[in-house]
Image (cartoon, rainbow, N blue to C red):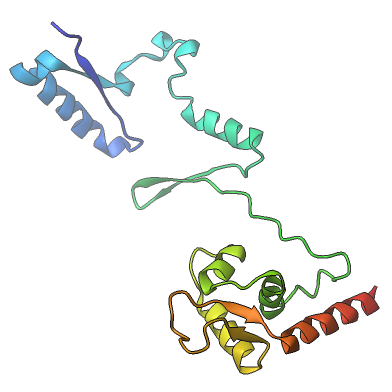
Length: 189
């Protein structure tokens, strides 16, 4: 006969202690289920029987330690409406500012888009991804419309503005705008 599969039933909610016990009793009392499954309730294991090498109940402490090792913020644990909620946070990407640009005046989105287009023609989704966005934002759409209207960028396929292959490129006017921005920044240092 094959070994029984162990089923672990647990919850942080004391209110469900009777339900956990009833579920264990149901599986254990059923002739067919009890042949294949062994139910384990953590609260049935006496604290004196818990060996340190089993690491029983150390998951929360392990998560805190692993986050600290990875340089991540400490996880948050809370009860919310009868639910246990754990929040793990990622480290936000640091956006570096050029030395010539004061922190109090972050680079505008239009300047960032123009800077990207200085190197190569890009589609909206490529621009969005390089900005660290998951999808094209309404703000990005607005900026691109504004840059087109000001003739700082142009379509690579002017006859088909809605083409799925559409990309945007910097115009000579856009290049002059970027050059002027660079000169203004150098004048501030």
